[in-house]
Image 1 (cartoon, rainbow, N blue to C red):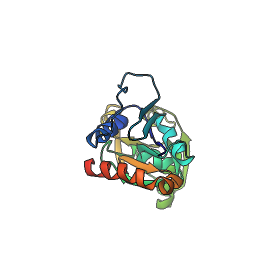
Image 2 (cartoon, rainbow, N blue to C red; image 1 turned 135 degrees about the vertical axis):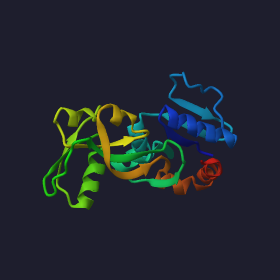
Image 3 (cartoon, helix red, strand yellow; image 1 turned 90 degrees about the vertical axis):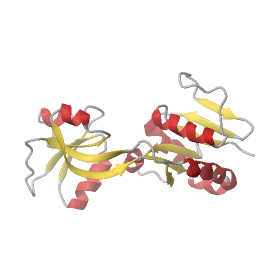
Image 4 (cartoon, rainbow, N blue to C red; image 1 turned 180 degrees about the vertical axis):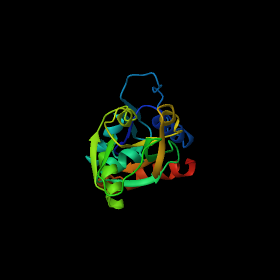
Length: 208
């Protein structure tokens, strides 16, 4: 039997996934959170976990280097990868929002300057509203953009909204809720169906 490779990103998503795997008897004896190893194997059950950057999980799964992966719906929406979204794992919940300074006034018909780490999500959302936008792609601290006049609004994911509040921003429009998703490579889903199905069923029984 071939190994099933599962791509994870270190952090809360990985820890929650490993807890769910443990509940169905899938463990990795040499794993501990502080380790720098990137690959761990369960030789008996032929399951291997590989740790990659969060933004790379979809790439590893789409290209077949991993058969399964766990990533946030936010990354899945942004990457638009060609893979199967198998199930909502129920943890890692947050939401996509449009936020702006408290005194921001929208001017219908005017192009909106949008600062974000998620240009594809932003374009799709505003396109559905029929609003023209200028996307300003940032890699961090998007909350700063409206404060210094770089953008009119931001599109970002929030969990509690505390960071927005501390920087004088408010949510002006929710986009959608996101959470951790299990994804599968389309070829692996067929060629390793029996093995993968057992893993999926175990996760489904223990999902939040």
